[in-house]
Amino acid sequence: MKVFFRITILLLNIAAAIGLLVVYIGLYVSPAHFWYLALPGLVYPILLFINLLFILFWLFTKKKALLLISLLMIVVRFDLVLSFIHLPYQPRNLPDDSFKIMSYNVKNFGLYSWENNTLIRDQIFNLIKEEAPDIICMQEFFHSKDNKFINLDSILNNSKQKNHHLTPTTIYKYQFWGIAIFTQYPIISKGKLTFKETTNSIIWVDLKKDDKTIRVYNCHLQSFKMHEDYLKKMDDIPQNKQDLKTYKNILRQLKKGYEARSIQADSLSAHIKTCPYPYFVCGDFNDTPFSYTYNTIKNENNLNDSYKTAGTNMSGTYVGNLPSFRIDYILYSNDFKAFNQKVITRKLSDHYPISCSFVLNETAKK
Image 1 (cartoon, helix red, strand yellow):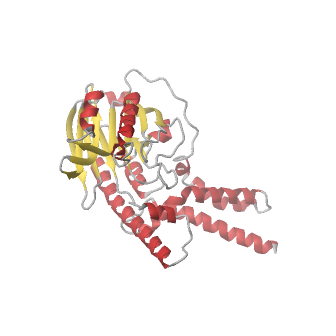
Image 2 (tube, rainbow, N blue to C red):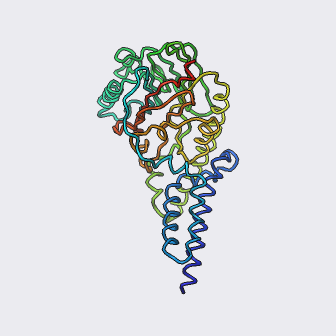
């Protein structure tokens, strides 16, 4: 009986280790070709926890060597562990020449919360004013020229960010939805990457800070566009044909999201490789650190993740019905040093804003 039990545990351990291996493979294989390899990335923290349990199990048996199955599989990509678990850095005094960047999916400033949308909008404005970023990247920006949601004018008139680049992705009469960058620094060049059959986009600006040109990318990549009813069903076991149909629709949405996002990540990565300046990549990636999207944008361009290098708190950035994943990022080239990255846990949107301060490295100043 003991032999059967240990063989069963061993087989389950191997299966869990293979699960981690599939996550690692999915980092490099585009979902545009094999989208299902991206799915295990959604449950990487669970797979990690299960493998840690197996390590503990074998540690207290005579077959201690078997703990290497999970241990080696974890260690080979330990950087993924640090993507969501790390000892927070202590806040540090900022150098005089530092500047702050903020990224925030503002969810249309609460437009569709009809009973208190102006309250939410004003609270978001106040938060931005409190943080006083020198550069802010906003996703799901909304502006109307003919009602109380004249948001563009409000930001330009009531903050230090007097320069902006705004790209509408949807326009209806006097209203538009889109993506925006606001900054106190002069904008000397700007551009955008747009994609067919989607309202997602990427914009960039070249800024003049002192005598140095810096590029900032602002990204809003493809979401899964899950209906609220779908999200409620994800924790349930299918009971009938209608439930099965719902699950098929969920998988279809996952497939579409992964495929579109991989194409967007490839386009952004290719554009980054042509950038002649020190740069930042900010925004809502709609994907976890255990994904092809993140790996393609960050690792293929040798970028740094401000959360990992200067994070002062541990928190996901998504505030919706799914688990609180980290899907919003401020990535940066090796020309900068990061200070005091934080996730601002104020629930005014379905995303928490993030901010981080930076200075140019001495070599980049030359």
